[in-house]
Length: 145
Image (cartoon, rainbow, N blue to C red):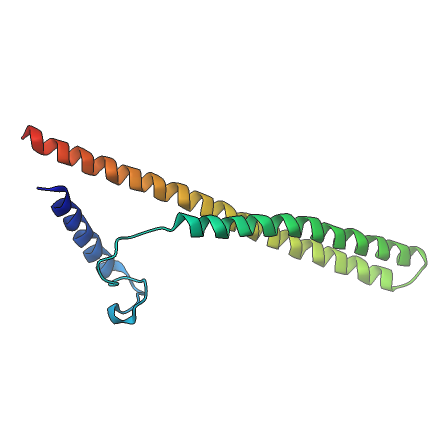
């Protein structure tokens, strides 16, 4: 069996398994990139993953800096107003606590996106290498039979 025949068989098997287990998919005639989209192999555009991950990383950095500046300013204003016996000082303290909580949630989300995309790119590269290695081994085995 040639490499091309083996590869075509693996693609057919994957397509059959995917169509049997996939619940949500793009119809074949829609021109989308979902299941049934023609002869295209499964592909991951590492440049796009990297760009999105990098954007999430940069957003995390900016949000960390700017979010902390807003927190500190609001905290100072609330403390100043409270020491002057304005009731607004307590309200600003509540705003600051809510702000800190929301910024923390956004920072976690940005970090999660960035880390997940880094992991996905590395995992896809590892999977590709394992597939190449298994196909190379199976091609070598044909010479010893």
